[in-house]
Picture: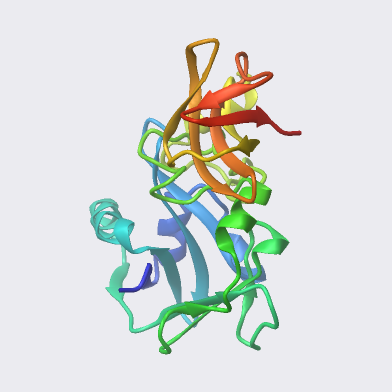
Length: 245
């Protein structure tokens, strides 16, 4: 079963409809893929996805497990807008090696390679995606990204997933306040891991909970941490964890 679903949005109001909802500026479609998220009105994560202009419409590349709820949410917001949301027979192909002519760079980080879409089966070139995500602290939906996530704590600014000049969108007020009026006290960070522990293992220091360990690869991992307590050696089950620069 494919891990991603490709939807197509079309109609005269498509781009303005998306612009009023998503965290990034739809004008970025002029330059390639746009990485963005849809949030709750309270600023929490609902879904992240890639957008690509497709003739007079827009392709939306989203994790399969998020797709049904995302379609429902977009349909709820659509009201009388001239927007049609439908499935496609397209699949994702991605890689970090030689790219086909139709490929576009992954906007989150150059090391994340390229993405393209066709009717061929979903596939990639065998790249170690977990290692790449850990190296650059890139969250994945269903792992680091959950309904309790805030996108700034999840690194979306560094991943080119949010635009602070585009104007209003759902959850914008909370996101802007976190950016301009507060200092983040929690968030995702790369850590060194000695030993191993299952994803979502609680991290403690001096017996106090300070975070959660998620994806691990090659002695490193992605952790969600309370910054005021994250120092020195920490424990995650049988593993020892240390914050990296």
